[in-house]
Image (cartoon, rainbow, N blue to C red; front, side, top):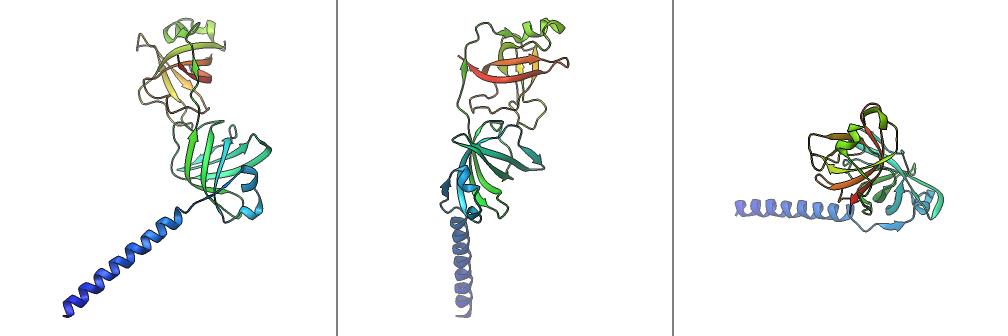
Length: 220
């Protein structure tokens, strides 16, 4: 009888632990209030769980260890600004101007501590007409340094890397993989811009051999 009583107590304890865990899980994932950047920036938003959509302010991001901080703004609300902190890593699609859907809680200092971050960047397409191949680009040597050009190629192995990397990806010649150029780019990338994708870039080659990219498009 004592053993059965002990078993009952153990089972009952496990059930209680599971229930507590479930309550904690569903509490943490409770529905968030949808707010604009302007609304979430108000003092009365502190302590609330919210979902806010905005565009990442250019060059506002900073990474310290695994913690990403950045600011978002709403083009429909000029002058708005909301600081966001996210500690779950940076996706390759994150970058300047990307639309970020941020869900989390507003701290007393007005920072949105984000537990869920979704980035949206619409795919852009560009014809390769008049674009240089990577082999042709590199063949010009110093004659093309700092000249704005269009170049077509393939996203190299492992790329794209996140926005904190010195090289976002390597652009490889579509016909001759022996020719490649490292690309610097801090803008947003769509999910379609992945390893092996054919892309068309606009930008310029610098004296150090890096392509300073201003626009990435998928090749039509």
